[in-house]
Image (cartoon, rainbow, N blue to C red; front, side):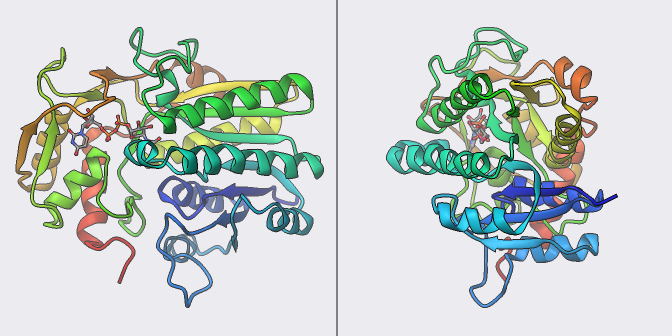
Length: 352
Ligand code: WQD
């Protein structure tokens, strides 16, 4: 039986590349679109380094197109060439801080990029869609653990989170207006870690904003120390609590969603699923685990809170377990071990 053709946008990024790896391992035909704005891509080679390594790890090949989802003609040419069964849409700008610096480019890239993609999909009658969403759509949690019924869009603390919320609203309207659309929105909590081989991992452009890459870069000596943004929250030790999820669990969560979506025969579907572990870990707990697992020291300084941060965020996991038959398997120890394995093997990320 002919394997399904899966198109993934942003497939050279941290989340995208790990999803591409598991899709190839499971014998899907994978077509990747990435504009390489967020992934290291030597001008002289045909594919981004992350995807070259994915092909080596899986001993499989993928189709790569350096293209921007802002360019409908590029998209059309790709859709003409392949009979796509489902699109996984990971391409987006994703820095909370940067989204305040350049909100217009975030709205333009994340929203109109999604609109272009959906428009071209519609032209080719491809209507199975997995959207890379985020826990930021929930804003300041009104209750914990956060279920998928928690209101979204209210007090989203930043333009980045609002772009994810707005695209979800567009997708809901689409699934009502045209019953052939089947859409799953995956709300990631805090993806961290790396493939156990240490060959692919998180390679932020510039100074990282997120905690785990900062810890890893301090550990490898790329950064001098970690600033802990506040220790006066109403949490176990005063520092921020988050639901960290191993990137491999997240990648398998996409597979579970894909399998369910390809079998989905309900019409006019929009379903959202939390992808998290259901447990919260504080900044200090993550630092301590990272130090103990990897036998390294992470010097830190307590500074003032970061604007827009919430005290605690972790999710309810029952829905994905029940409907996607998926749950996270890795713990914080695995996340710290694999994050360090990647960083220590690749002190400069994908750059040689
Ligand atoms: C985690 C905790 C910080 C850095 C964001 C997005 C979310 C997702 C993941 C895309 C907080 C503390 C952090 C540092 C620190 N991205 N911290 N010093 O803010 O929960 O989520 O990134 O989808 O959508 O909102 O993640 O890793 O930035 O912060 O003390 O140098 O670590 O205060 O408590 P966050 P984070």
